[in-house]
Image (tube, rainbow, N blue to C red; front, top):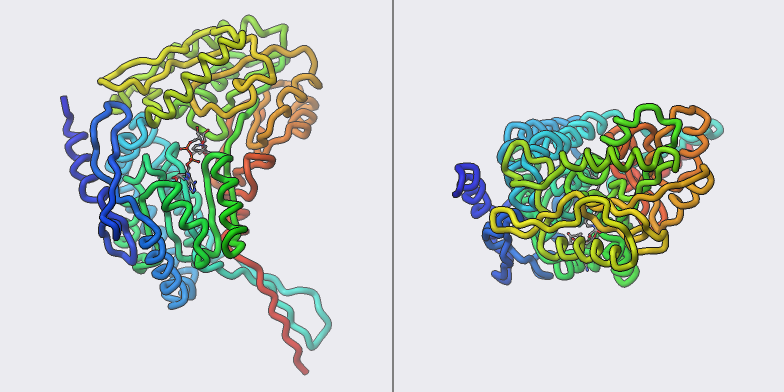
Amino acid sequence: MDTPLDWHARALRQRYLTEACIDGRFAPALSGQTYASHDPATGRLLGQVAACGEADVEQAVRTARRSFDSGVWSRCAPAQRKQVLLRLSQLMLEHVEELALLESLDVGKPVADALAVDIPGAAHVFRWYAESVDKLYGQVAPQPPGVLATITREALGVVAAVVPWNFPLDLAAWKLAPALAAGNSVILKPAEQSPGTALRLAELALEAGLPPGVLNVLPGLGEVTGRALGLHPGVDCLVFTGSTEVGKHFMAYSAQSNLKQVWLECGGKSANLVFADCTDLDLAVQKAAFGIFFNQGEVCSANSRLLVERAIYDDFLERLVAQSRLWQPGDPLLADTRMGALVDERQTTRVMQHITHAQAQGAALITGGQQLQINGSHNFVTPTVLAGVDPQQPLWQEEIFGPVLAVMPFDTEDQAIALANDSIYGLAASLWTDNLHRAHRVAGALRAGTVSVNTVDALDVTVPFGGGRQSGFGRDLSLHSFDKYTELKTTWMQFR
Ligand SMILES: NC(=O)C1=CN([C@@H]2O[C@H](COP(=O)(O)OP(=O)(O)OC[C@H]3O[C@@H](n4cnc5c(N)ncnc54)[C@H](O)[C@@H]3O)[C@@H](O)[C@H]2O)C=CC1
Ligand SMILES: CCCCCC(=O)O
């Protein structure tokens, strides 16, 4: 039975989905090609989506370059850019229900999460960068009289942002807000699964006063639209969040084209270490469950590997199984649903294959492991915990991007650190201890861009987010993010 929410969202999507937004105008892809978009939680067809190709990319790059060179945005006063981005942030909040519904219908996440986390989070990021842009000062280098050497940040020009489907609007905001605040013109390519909020954002940006051509949104398939952006000689900077595999493609595209700057936020396999001297085990269990089951585990920094000191291992596992019962999947449009549908059939199949393969390799299923059918969709996986994992198994080494936790006991601190660092990734990690010395010692030894102590997945716009190794390089969020969207210029003046 359709709900009014569905009617509203579907009507909304029809308006946006079949189009791209270039130079402030919504129009179909030049080829007229589209692809079908389905709601992963019901399987229902949501609409056709513009499948932009090379011709659309060419038009968007030309438009972005023209808008940048005109100076209408790039050379206006920072305070002017601030006002427009503050207005955009406000408009996102005024449309929070609509944006949350689009997000939930696109990717299957609980609409309650989108309402409480995704949309307010994205709006806050725009506000934060709007407020920062007229507070970024340059520098004057120490030189003798008669010389003035200034060091200033300048916008790069045309920035292309290719983003994934797990937090569509949030991760678009993480890239667009600093890029636009710095004065760049941007081309956004949303994931094929999640064009809705990206296109709606383009319209709200125009309403906020962003000049046409400064933000262009090109829905389309990764290997067509994303690839064309990665290869285009008119793109000055390519920022990406997604799989490590695709991140490597973007490095190759840059080398094959104009050596554009590439910044990557890729996969992760973050460890969560619980020591026996952690006294608040209830909180540790609750956060261990949140760290893997929130957003159906489709989080790059999800704590998908749990290491528990042997003395508390059995007790912790028992509590974790009880906690996992609070994360049973359900209809994402229901207000009390905490875990929704995985993003599509391909992702669900990939997650279930990992679960089956791990058991075939000897892992013990502690809880979960079931694929459920809800409202006609099979894209629901129960919260899953597997033990008896070999640290060389794919379950311990590969990013699963689903509600699947691998657990293992440890005996010594050194052993826990070694197991945690035995990864191709280096995005995030968590540890639980009441011992201050151990907290600092272990946090310093863990190879991760963010280490959370007595919490999981700490994340805020005021601190940089990103990692090393095959999790990529560069940082989203904080003022450090401007390093990706500006370049330093030295101006040297000799005078008498
Ligand atoms: N780090 C993160 O936040 C994310 C990681 N992932 C990981 O990636 C795995 C696969 O998920 P996918 O949806 O396939 O992520 P993906 O990395 O393929 O897609 C992310 C973005 O890259 C684009 N893309 C895909 N192939 C491309 C290509 N050849 N050239 C240029 N752009 C391309 C897509 O259209 C999308 O916009 C997931 O199971 C998960 O392990 C997926 C999404 C987010
Ligand atoms: C809003 C939370 C984003 C987590 C980072 C990621 O999954 O790419």
